[in-house]
Image 1 (tube, rainbow, N blue to C red):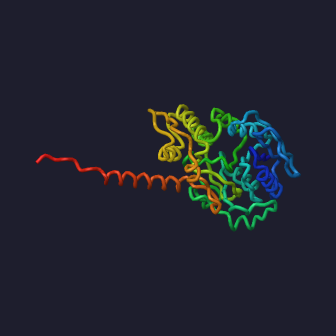
Image 2: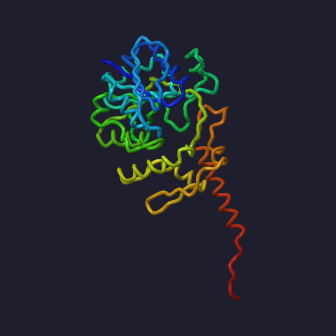
Image 3: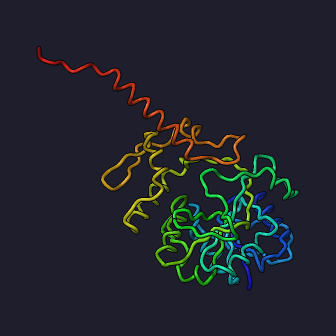
Length: 315
């Protein structure tokens, strides 16, 4: 079975070089690497024993869905492994996905370990990565056995997954009506679910996420999240990304207008500071920020109630 690895990129050239080095260090190397390039120039990548193909996409609005589709549709493997550009594959990732695909049909989701700042240089020390990487507190842990069923399509995460190309093709790939950041991977999980495609967690197939500053919830992508929320609502008749929208509403950035969300103002430096991943944190947490906002909202409501004058009563 031929296995193609697919990624997409905009900037982060150092991260991509480490991804390529990780593929070169595989116990079972892939048939090829295909990159959907969301910038004007191709990347300069390290030498490999497998071919690397780069597909340039037009436009500057981060067409994540289109980039994944370009890479997946032009890949020649029977099994497609999708890794985000900031991932370093553990040495057994390709072999682990091959094993999982041989025992379970459908989509497979491998493990992810988040690396602290300054750990991933040009020399890949996988023993060190394994010791210091942490699992995201908002993601499920690996299954008890080699694979385990996933019963909720909303758990699908495009950072590290694999599926047969035939399944990818039958679905038509990711919905390219989603532009920019947010919603396209949840939509893809929903399409899989509606098609009756099984979702599986895989023990192993681990990717090490390289540190880079980020915002969670992604307030810096407010406009595209609002637009993509509307696409999902119109397509499926229900909302998505609700925890992010709740946080944005508590920040005073958006409000409801019937079934739609409307933008009230742009994020301020204070909002960016609140959501910014700190240097000591291997990942940013939407839940932690939302808990802070909920506490502040409760405290404000309590203070407002305590300052109200008692209503007059007739003698």
